[in-house]
Picture 1: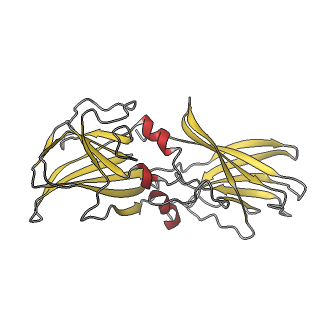
Picture 2: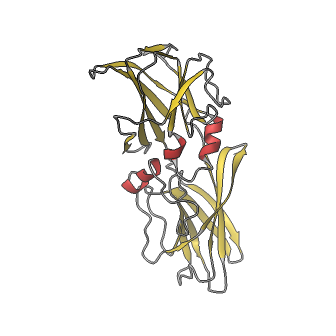
Length: 299
């Protein structure tokens, strides 16, 4: 989810609060987010403003009446910070500020964030709204700077997903669970790549049991393995990204068997998978598993 705050600033530093309101993440934005390997930094790099008043729809791909777009951070810190909330939501927020320099009077009725200056590079859109939630247009004088603050918040699923895996070694119960929520390492997802899909060490096999939701997955004796990006798309359950992690002949040959593993794509929460009983593997075997991660807008 995301939220905008608009502020007008005079040359003498006098500020004027204009509006604060929520946005909608567009379908096109969700589709792009699944393919980027730089996380949200790239996805919300540009701010777009416009004068259109057509209601927001998830299927829109651009502002209705664009005025301009900027990557400008002049005088401000573009990536101003990040914060982690506590249970039960464990939400993680990245704050981005973009500045439209003075020179031209502006009447702004719609705002969006996107991954480029083109009108169709839009991740989210919102109508400017007053305190009562009604659409309105705000005016920015020619001698005023417009600062747009955008807060992007990610809510990881904090419950286990259980299932079974049928292999030649028998039936293994599985638990899929996020990890590292509430920790500083997780916060890097919201500003910089956590681990890119091309990094050969963004899969981790372990002979240890899965850790609690908020703990770091850094098992003693764990071994890294490459992750392969397979595809991204949309089905009846929503937007997804699909990855495969593979332990070659020389990896994850634990005497105790493979009891857990972690995947850490750049866009999402690190995910761990637990196996009971542990999966036996020897140096004459390879082991691979495919994980499809679903995500969507928070209503």
